[in-house]
Image (cartoon, helix red, strand yellow):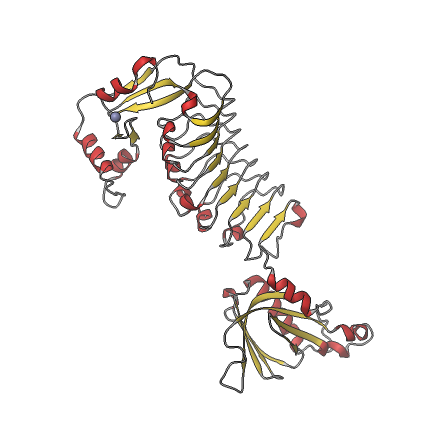
Length: 421
Ligand SMILES: [Zn+2]
């Protein structure tokens, strides 16, 4: 059995440590190759179980039987433990180990420290070659791909060093909580499983740049994820082939997104905060149930936009959906001022109904905010203005919904039967 960790070797009888500081090492537990044949004929060879300490510079061998005096494992949950040895008189301070692997490793050491004659020891393999260990040491496990259910590490868990984790076709019903603990994870691919919802704890993976959840059973995307560090770190999000009906208004906070795939869902609308995704370059919306695109989509600098296979309204000219322009209420004026000056608010300083009023801020085509006093209209927009490459079913214009904050904006943006961008 092997364990990757940091080890600090200290001589028990000397004040100065054998190594100046903890070094990256591999600990291995096994049987010396030369006595392997004896094991089959006699039980007196139990003492030949050996602990191998392999660092980048040197390799040390320690007998385990009657030589490991004590094992301190109070902090095994933090990946730390100490082994006290008799000959040579060393103390091995283990740190930065995977807690699950460390616990198993120590269990084996304890079992072989003082094995009684009637105790059947756990079978140990032949001691690995030190050169092999050094080779392993140079390559921490960075990528793990599991494409078959029987290979899923139910007991062992995942290596804590992994940066890319691919789990496909494993019929996962939810995101394994052990995945959330992989703090180095940058790419998580859970394509083709049966995941129904995402835990908000997913936000703990603050280095995650790519999240692939295609071909699952998601019906919603949690708003709580949109307001965490993931909103900036996540560059690629694939939610295609799910059962999404809508996205939360907070989705506009995911400002780090560069590529977003929402193909083959049941989306009727997109949140009106969509124009805040300023980094977005590739947006796939094919095969949904969209009647129109949200306002101010043209503010995005998209390279590719695919909107084919939707149910766009057949608007040939601007159609007024709601007309609420008039004398502005005091609440409307306050909201507009708060938004312009970016005044922060939450439920601890404002009543809930005011918070939900402020949350429902629309952005006029002029860029100014409006809340309940607006003209809501739907109008065709020249699709070529949306992105460098636009994929549609036909050459006709795409309808876009817009909110207009004043009579002046209505005159300015609704001329010639089209929305004027
Ligand atoms: Zn306006």
